[in-house]
Image (cartoon, rainbow, N blue to C red; front, side, top):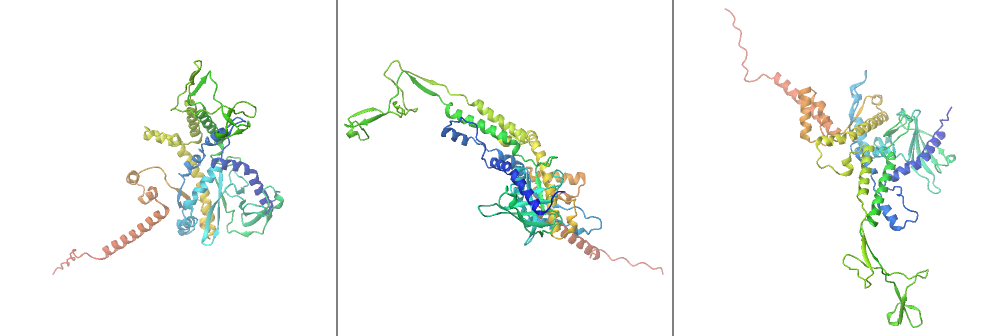
Length: 491
């Protein structure tokens, strides 16, 4: 039977971080623009190395930013009340208070960007001074263990590093299991014998409070981001641009030459003693300056478009070499970027900036692949957020909301659409299909959860005022209504 003691779990989790450190660091370098150097000759000089540095064209953030900017949760809808439970147990207000308390309106983007870049990120839910809060955790500092990593949403243990070891100072980490939180210290990720785990304390949930956000999980349990598969193509683009810069620097201009004449030599002044001097007043003669091998050193020629070349010797010939073409290299860069767009499902006009003369249908077709990609991310991340909301509800003492597995996060519609177009479409849905108008409020572009709740409250107040006015109208006879005539009694 596997050892599941806290010390054993801490060692296993630290070993995972040690194993993945090099891979995650390489991904992080590419995100930050610190790419692999393009190929250059071993004897390359400083000018070559400068061109290699300038050849880095960091397209990697676009892979992350394009889908991340379309991911924005602005509402949570709990499931209906379960059988036998009171209706107020499904109130959305408590769940959204946890979201606002955690400042997730702004901080959710970092969770998505971490998951898209490294393949996964984490969110920790814990009790704070003002209530339950959640915060994002980096994949470089956090690891989790699953019985079935491909299908399980609930880890049975997770660890996040809070302070790395430095000198004689030990590294610190926090570890969570289904019931307790432990403080962990260690000397280095490779020194598992130095791991020490303190006594656990209750964290307030009945399962591990760390939730994984994975951009993609295969059946082997491996998480794959959007950056790592594109590293070879990013290197290819950098290499092509480096070749373009070299060609642009050395062969893109005409080279003028002269034959049949010796170049002028650098001269040095000689005094009466035969020594070299820099004072023209002491000079009595001059001679060619020699290099370390005893060869004369040619003088540099200051030649530009304002100067003419001439020679007294009639055998001297002048000419020029044509500039080398750089158009094929530019076409190669364009082709590599198109390959990048196709493989990453990024619309080409997002990368090339070519949107002229494109119809609405062509733009929609170009955005289709990206829209499908974003819909996949929303499905994956939405399930993770629902688990976060359930754990937060349990920590707040709301057992019914914790057992509600039918809640859904609501993603903001990020498509570019005018308010007039949206109002026209929503009006047709209400009039032609009979959809309740209140059910379409969440479809209004840009509406937030707080605004939606305000609308519901105002609508309920208006309904109650209208009902009261109707009741008073029915109870009070109108002054213009004649009193009923008395019945005639036969004499």
